[in-house]
Image 1 (cartoon, rainbow, N blue to C red):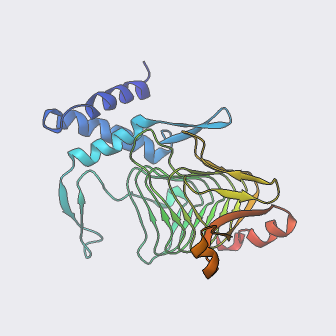
Image 2: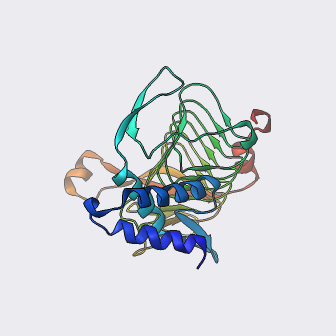
Image 3: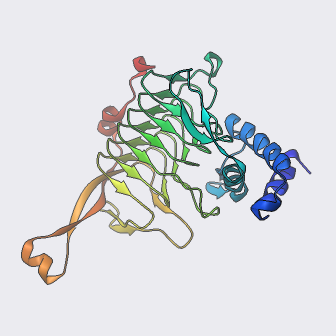
Length: 281
């Protein structure tokens, strides 16, 4: 049995135990082993597999186990600004050798998150535990990468973009954003959403697993299908739109409901408008 399979087996067993029966030393050892692999990006909460994505519930179990065994403590932060968190939830240690830029101004990365080479974090921004952020991705000011979110390479998360976290249920899909996606300012991408490579999500769009998306180009409505997430197609350009509400009261008052709309698929003009500025790196 491989070391990863052995770790998975240990975490699955410990997770099912009542809190008062867990061997804290064994649980701490298992969590530290998982944390190291999450930091390296060799183990992920979800990963591509044969053109699709596979969720690894045992990874979320390990993170939840760390919360369960950790006690809240006062942590020193650069010797001046203390914070209080579970003892198992440290701040990720990043060095020059990692090739990551975290601009001063209040950003943080929790230990157990992976950041690829060339990632840039503008202040303030935050990457939570279990998240995976691919190479050369830009995380702009006030942007959040939630727990276990999977972000590809050369993604641009614009200012105030919120990428939701998903820890429970352990088998649920985290938010998945593939390579080359552009997320506009003030967007919210939440549980049950999968965005394929090269898509553009315009400013102010909100996507959740229960949000229907109207594709004007292909004349279809995209929805979550059973256990599969809402999937935005490759290269789709999504804007915030509206549709009329059929209720008589709504008709009398001209009311409409928000809905995201795919208005086109990427072309040269879209590529130029969303190109990452290399000099920023």
